[in-house]
Length: 155
Image (cartoon, rainbow, N blue to C red):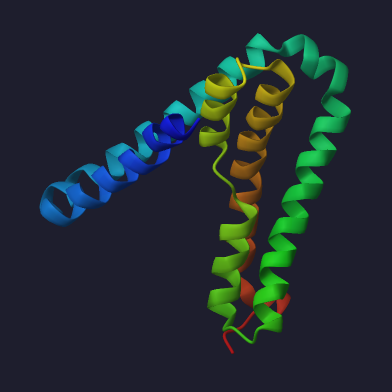
């Protein structure tokens, strides 16, 4: 398990940091295409997980949807309000809220397929997580960019 975590997390992170520090111009050129490619890979993982487990989804969708929504709402709110309790700036509160509320769904799918033999229920949960985080990330970033609507002005 340690070896898998090393391969999936640590090595790509270190290589990415090394590359971006050594090849700054190349990093600026490739960053946008890499973001697009990684987004397309996430979508592919989600579609594959969903299609392979459609029967599980139809049986348990009502639970999966609500569990993911509730978990995400609690994470977003707790990140924001814990930062507020600690008297951080509004910008820091927003950042912590997003960092707490939007987890890495692509990584979750890779872990499910690698460590748990592609368990259908787990893959489906991670797939819906990916879809919902795209939706909630868009919603929360829209709300935060129009902070005056919720009285989220910088303090």
